[in-house]
Image 1 (tube, rainbow, N blue to C red):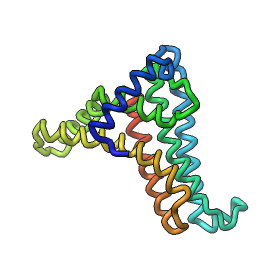
Image 2 (cartoon, helix red, strand yellow; image 1 turned 135 degrees about the vertical axis):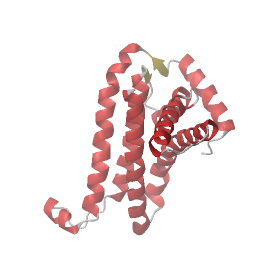
Image 3 (cartoon, rainbow, N blue to C red; image 1 turned 120 degrees about the horizontal axis):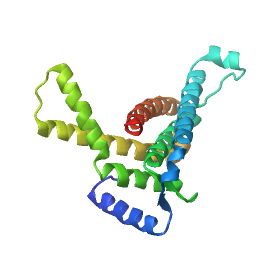
Image 4 (cartoon, one colour; image 1 turned 90 degrees about the vertical axis):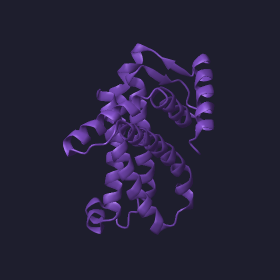
Length: 204
């Protein structure tokens, strides 16, 4: 998926229609789901890391009783799910719940873009981080540069989620054994970063 202005406009239309249809619902009671989704995100990320560590370590394979385990495919899937669940927690933190099992991943992605990227809530968070970093390092960046960098970081987060969603569908079937190990390591690294950054937003 190309994340450009055309795609953004399409997401706006889709989300507004889904709100009207009651597929995307905003209620105070949905905030109770935040902990549930955070726990699922943590479990998914831990599962991804464990699978990867056992897959690259023959000693751990023997200790666990799974010689020659190659869990890279499921490490990629679990990495993606940690991102999916932490975004679900973020949406729940403002009372948003997706009431559909069909297309839940794309619905969640669109809601994430609509409620957090388009409202500059992600950008604001990164503006503050960059300002703090500038203060600590003593660099004299102008405000335009800070805002530009913040916006780039926000776009990067949205793109990471989209990329992992698509990787889950394609890399699962198309990668050879050598490439899938590298992709699993990349997925875990990206999911770790994404989890930490989105958790900061939830805790604000």
